[in-house]
Image (cartoon, rainbow, N blue to C red; front, side):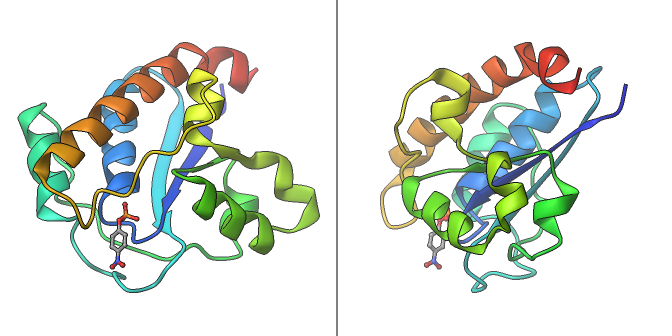
Length: 154
Ligand code: 4NP
């Protein structure tokens, strides 16, 4: 089966989307899936994930320290099958950038995975507990997504 190509997108590509990428890759072992992440902003191109995202991932046995920040580019809209925005601002930015023929690939992450039209909140300016909450939301959503991969890929 062809891998399902999944892109996670947040604002900076250092907190939420790299964590989502690491979690899904971790959970996807044995499934045909390609995973990547990107930011709508370009401030952190080439940067490591935020140390608090690296730490919460590590506490759950997931290593995201090899990932580097990048900005969404036009080719992403054709290269990926599903593009998940972490929050409604990210989704609005993606909707403005994506060609009409690729709009169907864009989804709010928790809406698509859990049927909850809620944002994964930006934890950048908050305390470490924000990263625990983000991890839990991402883990729950990614677990649900994994259960639906066969249906999505067929
Ligand atoms: P993220 O969090 O979108 O989850 O990666 C942010 C990281 C950095 C910035 C904003 C949000 N920033 O403005 O630099």
